[in-house]
Length: 344
Image 1 (tube, rainbow, N blue to C red):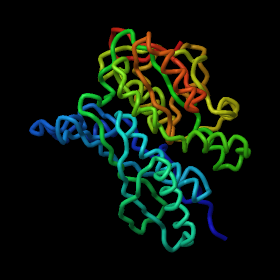
Image 2: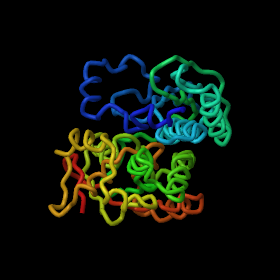
Image 3: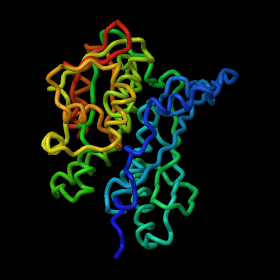
């Protein structure tokens, strides 16, 4: 009997190295100060590197790969590719092509399963209007798939995570709960309707990033992935030297996420995330553990987190809703102060 994909892995963006440990690992890596055309490197923990080619073009380069969060091979490929392309959109860029990265347990997985994973990734790239132009593969104990994604952006329109301003509204474009739903799926406790909702969200390309880059009112942007909402919001706060307030009742959630969280479903990454940055977060005393798990839940192919002038927030929401991001919501605001997040 062939094992389920999720039985061969330890889980999607939840398998990312914890943010505090990652910062320690990168602390000794020298910054690329001698490269004036490198507009974005590792200094701010941003979504992708950006290199200026000329006065009109900069290349956006990123890579992302992980182990399965679903059992359907084609769906896994689609989710992984969509997630990798998201980092290009989060910088304000438009993808131009991708390279596939595949690590597969060749003696465990049937060849047809591997083909379906690659086909799913190619299908997601086709929806983005780009080719998979090559890649690299190795034989490893658990399935791994993702992309090197390359895009273009105008050098003056790059959207970084450290340019937010006091008074900015915070918009989250997708619902939270992918990690919680995937944890339920692993235990075969996720119904078909909830799975369909998770799949729709995780394969929805973050294409609004390209037009958000054209807006002067959008000051900073990132996407919410493995470090959870609190982790990626803290990245904006640290980089911009600002404090954030978010309303727990304002957070958009995927269908069944609240119910499953209340039942105790969570990934191990939620706890690792909280241990990494919980000291930088102020919570109501009445907050339950399941609510903290939602705030720290690792998102695979999560939504854009947008810091924008408050006057522009309503127009941005209307356009997001019109493009199918129906759960997009204003979740809070930024203000002057030490880098912290307060949950109200």
